[in-house]
Image (cartoon, rainbow, N blue to C red; front, side):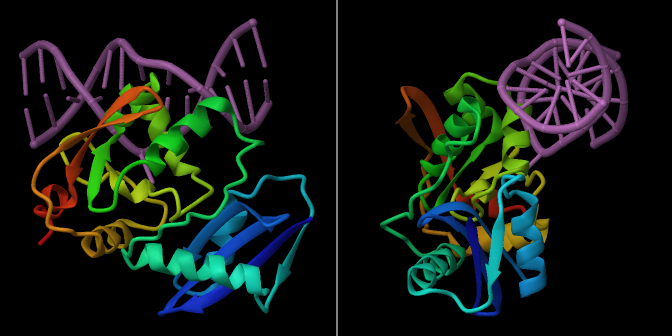
Length: 194
DNA sequence: TGCAAACCATAAC
DNA sequence: GTTATGGTTTGCA
């Protein structure tokens, strides 16, 4: 049985789906209705679920973390994600995305190179990212450093990235899963918007 | 700039 | 097994 909890924090509604304390999906939205709609989109189907309108204590803690991530704050202990039901390649892409540090962005192509796949597949994986905003799909942009698509709207992604500015100026190379991932300061992208 | 073709794992059929 | 589908990229005019 999957338990779904929502909570309004700072004018945004966050939602999580828990299966034995592990996160099966997470999402957010302007109001509760939108947050729920968003989380249902990526819930593994053919599993029973129940929506709780009063968050349990363990759920409250995770919801608070979601809000912190959303506000661009550093969150140390990322909650456990349930990925068993996902294909291997998808897991790899999600894991690599998770490695993009706060204050940096990367491109679909860079992720693709790191996981040995194609850029469009990365986009497709992100489009159905069940763990927004924990898996920071908003930190992936196009190779010309303009914004690609975003499930929650381009305005939302720009706002998120603005909050993640940390004043970095140099690109960085990371080793993830044995592959190399190049990341760039968020500022590179935001230049086009400010 | 703008367009076409290559890209490649998934899900749906 | 086959096909359609992308939150892309690259190359060429």
